[in-house]
Length: 301
Image: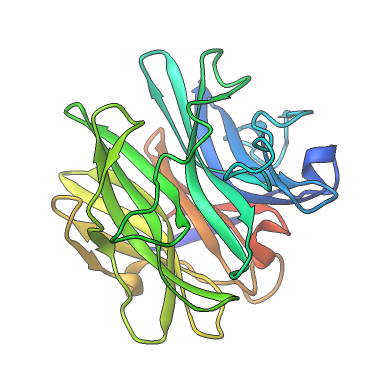
């Protein structure tokens, strides 16, 4: 596997109030023909994440055709799990509606932050979204007691909603948390059953982060791209395969993409989203600064 980088698509430069900086966690959505929309979170002047989008022709993605003037998902009410930021993680169509799974952010107290998974639903084609609940869709449990259950990937198979999500395992200290990728199922995409099953675990003692799963099923094989990092290092993109979506074999050495020698993605690459359009595989991803310098794309050779 070898990915050919094609460059940066979008750079946040304060185009609107909701995107003063950052374009974090790009989520591409096919809008018909060659038109694509990419949902992402920009940050306002108070550094709070808000969800909006850009649109472009996939044949010329660097020419932005539209930027949402206002966020399509704003902050939650004061005191709720998402009152300090919202970041998209997955969009899926079902029964004429769009389900937007997102990360809700809180400022921390004894630890620096909390991240919980939320869900908003659109009935107007993605022009606006309303929260399915004011509470997180993944609550704390005895097996997962930390306030870190987020960055979901969701597929629907044979009437079962399957989710791979980021889950905190421990806070080493107030500024340092470990997290990996776990698995859950649902009958409606709203109420989820989970028992703490690990999908992608740490591959060494010094690895502390495995995040942002993106799963596709191809020729009977589940394929997952994600990002991972070791202590005192920055994110890189990893890859794994599975026959059932439950037990995974990490093949990070085969991922075929790394940081560039210079430029916007020379320090780190993270938050991959892989999809296919007209027989060509694309990967959208963030670079330096967790999206501070924008998002770009690569194509599979």
